[in-house]
Image (cartoon, rainbow, N blue to C red):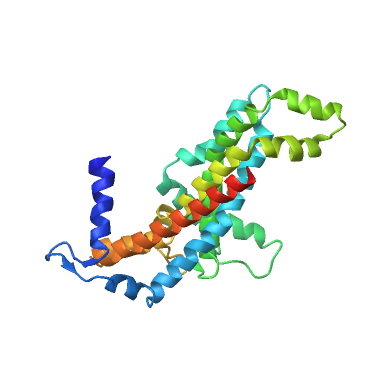
Length: 267
């Protein structure tokens, strides 16, 4: 923890107020990096893209994960195979996933647009379009991660006492009312944990952007972590990259605190 977490975080905090290219001596510049941030159009675009990505990915992944968990929470023969199949994308090689999805999203030869061509006249350009590229990454993200959060929801569902459903059934509650009045309230701790983890991971998205679009076309999929990577390891502006990472840390911390306080008030 000391070597791989605490010291790098501390060093990053120092670099946020400095200018360093990894070759020259570190030069203290005060708040100059942070002042530059808010006039940097690329940073504003990256922040906007990250927020947009998070707004879509968090609820969609939660809904899909819960839906899958409800479907697969059955005691029937062979159900473990289906659970494994839906979990499999999470452990599949990211590069392989990105290559396959880029082929699926090909604007003219991809099977997705070939199917949509039967229904629509104006087809999306997906990863080759600045208008659609971020949505393509959102789709892949939801597909990739919903299996993992499905497992968490399955654990939550299987911990709900059957007596609650029996009591609700005796009171005349149908399946929908049982879901609304028994399942969802019982899953509240799991849902809160999933929401926190999804929010944090969404703000840290990097791998899919790097492999699928490299922040393009233009800057349409440029997100905060990808900009940190570019500023540090492409432009060698480690101080400026550290300042962006500090802003990212503050945003994630603030959102997490707000979510915890809202959950505590509900409790």
